[in-house]
Length: 382
Image: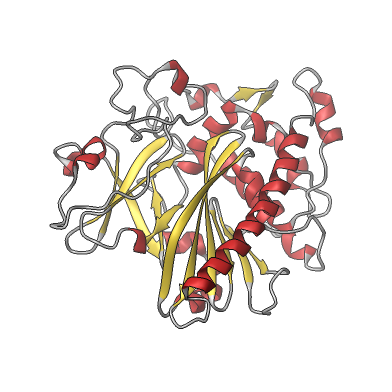
C-alpha cells in the first residue's frame, strides 16, 4: 500500500501528524519529555520520517575524497529511496535515483516489505542495504557493477540535488528545497576554520547498532544533564544543528556537532571524527565512521591512525551502549492499549542535543506541504 497524506499516518491509536502528540516534547528545556515512544518503534512513523525528513532535508552521504576520480560512484539509500552520486569527467558531482528502485525484481518480495533493509545480491534499491563505493575503470568508464544503478542511459534517470560543504557530500531529493547553505545557517562560521587545509580521509568503518537512529545521535551529544546554557534551548527559531564544546576533549576548541538529520562530527584541532547515520530498520541503524586527519598532524601516521581509530571505536561502543539502553526503555513507555499512560511514563529530555533535535523532528513532521496528487513526494509503488 502506498500511503496517502490526506488519509494521515496512524499507529498506536495516535494520528502521527497531530500537534498535540508532540506538545510535551516541545516544552521548554528541562520540562520537555522525550518524543512519544511511537517515534522509536513504529514502522508507520518511519514512513512519515521518509516523507517529511529524508525526502525533504539535506542528507549527508559521504565525502568528496571517497569518489576522487571521474566515473567513481557512491551509492546511498536515503530513507526508502536508492540513489547514487557520481563524479563527472569535468570533476562535478551528479546525483540520480537508481535505475532499479526494487532491485530488478518484478514485484517487491514480502521479506523486503517489513521495514528492515535486507541484504541482497542486487543491493541497488530502497529496500536493501548499500554497498561500498564503486570505482570506475582506469579510463573513467562505468563498470558492470554500476549497470544496476545506471542502466544504459544514466542521463535519463531522475536527478537529485547535490551540494558539498567542506569535504562532505549532501543530497536533497526535494526539487523545491532551499540551498544547503541556508540550512546550515551560522554553522560554517564556527566549523569552516577546521575544514581549511589538507584533510586526509582514512578508510571508513561500517557498524550496525540495534537502536533507532535518532537515539544514536542523542547519545553522541553526551550526558543527560541540564547545563547552564539551558535558556539557549528555548528559542523559537531552532537551528538545523547542535553545536557544543566537547566535554570529553582536552583541547578547549574541540566541539561536538550534529548536522541534522544524520551527520555527527567531533571536531578536534588535528582531526575530525565523522559518523553518518542511516536507518536500516526502526530499531536498527547503520553508522559509517571515518577519520579526517590534518595533513601535517602528528596523528597522521600509521601508528597515529591506529591509535585514533581504537580510541574512537571505544567511544562509539559507549555511544551505542547508551542508545541501546534508551531503545530498550522505549519499548516500555506507554502502551497502545493505554495511551493515557504514555505522557506519565515518558522521561524528561535532559540531553541538550537530543532536545534541539526533537524540536527539529517535530517541526519537520508537522510541516505542511502542497501535494499535486494524493501521494507522498516519492511514493513507493508496490
